[in-house]
Length: 181
Image (cartoon, rainbow, N blue to C red; front, side):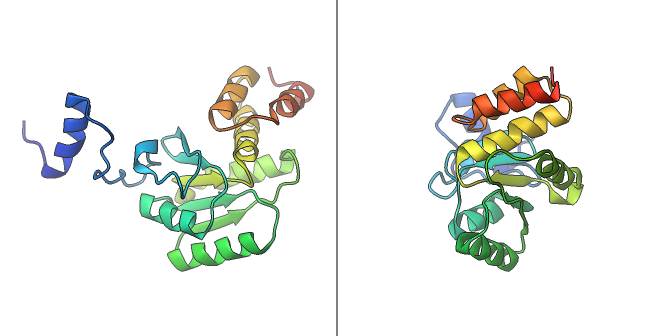
């Protein structure tokens, strides 16, 4: 078997149990694993699926990090303001798609559908989702997962893994209202 030079650091990490392979580039077209992400730029990063990463709030440096990691789109859940405008400009400059779904409280059904529509466009993937805080991102992720048929208990677990915290009771109540099992 012939192994390419670029695979050697990754293979060494996997076989020898070494620490994170910091010199290994993210795989193109996929959301990176946490060991490839600069935590200070993408706080509380979580790889939710092979195509979707979730983070706490980011700034312009976070957009640059998202571009470096190969994300095609950044979805920002923050509700307006100078930070949103700055992030939009930085994303346009970096040639990364930018979508703002401004939330006040829990995402509405229409906002969850809007998020689902963004995910549904193949050209938007891989995607980075972030909000004003990690709880906001986790709430959107849990409600999205339930909207595509994932059982409520699993959707809540997925949301918790993505950062859902203080809003978990409200998300659980919303799922119960909608009849999600």
